[in-house]
Amino acid sequence: MDEALGTLTELRTALDAGAVTAVQLAERALARGDALDARLHALLFPRRERALAEAARADERRARGERRSALDGIPLVLKDCIVQAGEPATAASKILRGYVSPFDATVVARLEAVGAVIVARANMDEFAMGSSTAHSCYGAARNPWDAERSPGGSSGGPAAAVAAGIVPLALGSDTGGSVRQPAALCGVTGMKPTYGRVSRYGLIAYASSLDQIGPLARSAADCAALLDAIAGHDAADSTSLPEAAPRTVAALSGDVSGLRIGIPRDVLALPGAQPAVVARVLEAAETLARAGAKLVDVALPHTRYGLAAYDLIATAEASSNLARFDGVRYGLRASAPGGVTAMIEATRSEGFGAEVKRRILLGT
Image (cartoon, rainbow, N blue to C red):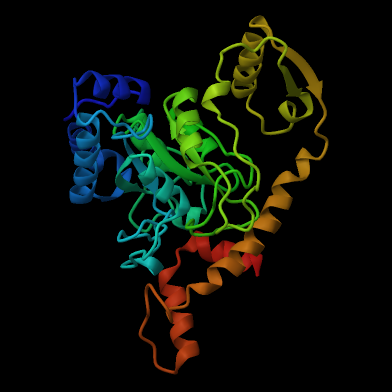
């Protein structure tokens, strides 16, 4: 098996020193993905020829003394709900098997502009509906630390790929925890950016008022570099924030002196909060306090209503967003006697998995 790829910082240093080429990094990422596929099932669609061609162009730029960005020549993976021109985009659903996107998501165009090399598409819960990556029409993904355990979801494939050293970076999507939770379960760093900070154009929608594309990496610094590459206003997304995105990497000084950190004691005391998890949260807070941060107790009394509100909003929007998958324009079309209505009923019955149907029904 090819050795695990290091962090973005390590790979960039090696590229600059000539110790490795972008083509070699892409080859190593693809080989490691292949070697771990049977155990982890993190990746769905490798981009072998195209990724190696993009990596070769990055090497040519570096040979000329050019470098587009800190991500130039760095391999990464995309969650299968972020579209890329000429590539399959199925959201891990049978209903979109065979669909090939005719256009790039804005985040993909921005990654290509800075020279990043997208080596594969990653497994996920169908239409991002799940917390385990078990709801995938391609089969469940597994946690690299223990293949008997879940990597979390719905961005379990991207998180597992980063944790297993297949790639240093990945993009997932987060509606109700779908980047943050698998990052936690796989021991990597993940974040949901402020809504509107990253364009959703080209993200296959689950719940449009909640969905955000977010970075996964092995460190906060690497997450920040990936976020800086994709953030910013996009005229193609009406919910995109109009002001310029702050440069996240520049804010990583390491100095937390005077930083005020809220501790939601009422949330930590809610039924179901696991004592070991609460202890780790408080340990982290105390570590920051020793480094100069100020801990402030905050009240979040409406937290107990959060799940109910999320279920109402997310399922209602899912019902609306997934109405477009009807067998008429693209994707699966089932054969059924009785005309268009019967065809649509058969297509949606055959194409959607049980969890997606459950959420559509709840939302409707």
